[in-house]
Structure formats: structure tokens, C-alpha cells
Image (tube, rainbow, N blue to C red; front, side, top):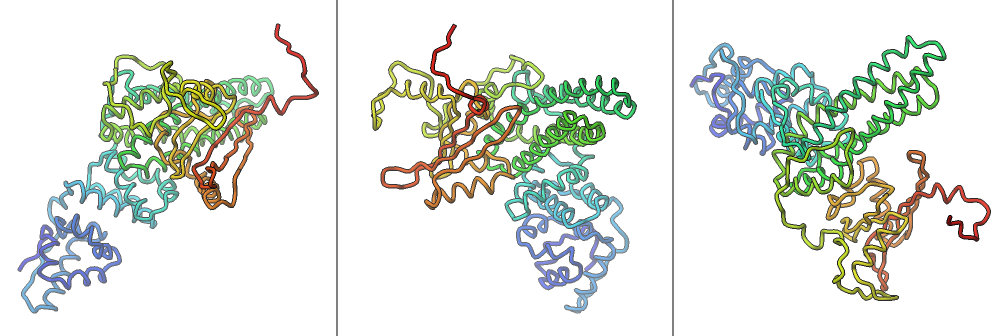
Length: 496
């Protein structure tokens, strides 16, 4: 028998089962062959030159070692063809094998593997990758136990490994008015704003005089205010696209992206504080840092996230996204109107908030009165507080669509687990509150924060029935800025 670089691993393992233990002991890089999933995917079609590349060793060395072990264990005559395959290893083409190779590359990357070596392995074994493949790979790695924070930490390095392949992918296109076209248009406006802000920051070292800095500071105030509109862009992703992807079983990449959103939000706040505090050096440093994060996010959206959403979501999904995005609003641009969503079936009845007012709506018997569902809806939307209700299974069932909510909401959160409606850094607190409510050890939790010049009071209440059984959690948020400023008394009506 003659072993060549193109000899298949799977038949060799079937003919010589002892090779599995031999390879696992031959190099720590081959320990992964013990994984039955890897053997059923990559192992089924891998050639020895591909296996050698996965083990970061020359094919000739692996062939000689395998041939020698077969001769030693069986006495058979086995030779190894000298030299590497002239054309190099063939790339894997089936999706499952490609995904396993990608996962293997990322595991090595997270364990400190050399980026250039891994880029070569990717180029030889995969060569081409789509946004949906990267998303599926990250989803499985998180499901298998790789910490979400670790995926986020090295997200930029992931992109670096795949960048050459991603650069060859055309940007996904959509008709003006389609949510994806709108998000891309916002990115074009954001890129111009980033460039303008970078140009302004580059002038800070030369602006040494008080009057120069005063003029520059006013300009930076204006730019920081414009950059703050990025909140609407991110909210549309978090409240509309992420829930739609979760419904398709894709949640890991969205959580990683949400965590990066929060890093950018924090960076923008630091940039603004530096300007407020007249700190030129910190303004330049914080501004440059957050602009890089924003640019990197634009790249990830357009090369990975947008193509993945376009491949994953159907027309009904996009129609729902469209309806919700109009409630959140738009950053820097006015969307087109050419795209018209196809009519779609309404969500399941137990997953939707109450519909609009209706004179014929049914009466609801309450403990202290009888009201129509129309009036109940009107009452809840006229309260000077935001209300969100989460049931006993941690599923969001309702939010009050007040004209001026403290925290934006959109229909995409209905039917979504509340854990998926919060950024990763808040999950520990959310779960702790819900666990205490369910256990009956606590009935209320409250917080107060300052946000965009407003003082916000946030309260969570355990909702229990007459028998004391936990039925859910009620979140009540209120802007109490004016209430805190009240002094003395007001006993007379002062209408003009």
C-alpha cells in the first residue's frame, strides 16, 4: 500500500482503528479526532494533507509517521509518497465540514494560536466563508461552552482571520425602504460622520490657544450629539432583528454584537464627558477609540450580520421588522418607500400586545369595575409611566405603547424571553431579581439613574395572584426629573 497526501483518513481509521489513538498521542493538535462529530463531518472526507494542515505540520512528516505505525502494528508493506501534494490540500466544500474546520480554527485562536498560521489554514481548508457560516460557527461554539465574553473579546481577530474572504463578498443589496437598505443607508451617513469627527479630532493638538479650543469644543459637541443618534440604529437591531433571528434559533452572535453595542455606547459617553470637562487629551483619545469601534461594527454588520439576516429571514419576518422599526425611528436619514412588505399573518394571539381601539371591543370584568379592552388600552397608554409585563415563564407579554416612553420598545420583544431583551452585562441582575420574585423572598426592586439629562426611576414588582402564586414581573419606569425638582406647594389651577 502507498500512502499519498490525497489518501482519505476515514477508510484508514476503519482499516486500522489503532490509528485514532496513535494520532491523538502523536500531536496534541490531533486530540480533536477523538470528537465523534468531527470524525463524522471533517473526518469523513479529509485527506491526509488536510489533516496535516489541521495539525500544523508538513504532510510528508504525517505520512511517514502513519506508514511507520501501520508497518509496526501489522507488518504490512506500507510506503509513503515523498513530498507534499503539488497543488496543496483541497478546500472542504460541504457546509458541516466547513463549519467544523471554522470552529477548530477559532478554538485554536482563543487558545493563543498564531493568527498568520490560522489564516493560512483557513485559506487552504475553507478559503471562502459567508456571514451565515460565521454566525452558525459562533452559535455552536457558545452552545458548546465557549464563554460569550470570550467570543466578544476576540471578535476583531476572528474578522482578521476571515477578512480576505469577506472582502470578496459583495455587499447585500435591498430595495429602498427595506429594513436592510435603511440600515445600510444609515451606515453610509455614519461613515461620513465618523470621517468628519476624525478630521476634527486630528486638529486638537494644533488647537493650543483658548479661543481655538473653544471653537473646536463647540464643533465636537455638535458631532457628539450627531453620533448619539447611533442609538436608534442599534435599537432597531436589538429590538427587531435580534428577536427575528432568535425565532430561527440564532441568538449567540446577536448577544455578542449587543455587548459590543454597549461598549460603543459607553465609549460615546466617555467622549462626551471629556468634552464637557474641557479635557482635550481625553477627548482625542476617547474619540479616536470609539470611532474605531464604530467603524469595526459597520464592517461586521455589512460583511457578516446583514448577509446572514438576508439569508435567514423571510418576507414575513422583514414585514414585522419594518413595522417595528417605524416605532424606534431612524438615524441621520429618511428611508425610501419603494419596498412594500407583503401582507403577513398576524403573530399568534397570545404573543401580541392589545390592538388598537375598537368600539366593539369586549368588556373585561375587573375587581373594581368593568371596562372595555379599548378603554384599558387607552388607560395604560396614557399613564405617565412605562409598563412592561413579563409572565411567570420570563416571556415578555405586554408593554405600554406610550407616546413618549422612557425606554424605547417595539413589537419585536413580544413573545421574547426577557433575558434576551437585556444586554449581556445586565443578565446577572435580571436573573437575580426574577429568581427572588419566584422564590418569594422579595417583592420589589428599584433603581434610579441619570440618562441624557433626565433622572429615571425604575421599579420591578412581583405580581402574585390571590393565592400568592407568582404570575410574573411588572416593570415600571418613570422620568422623575420634574418631580424631584418640586418645591413648596401648588394648590391652585394655573391654566391660562
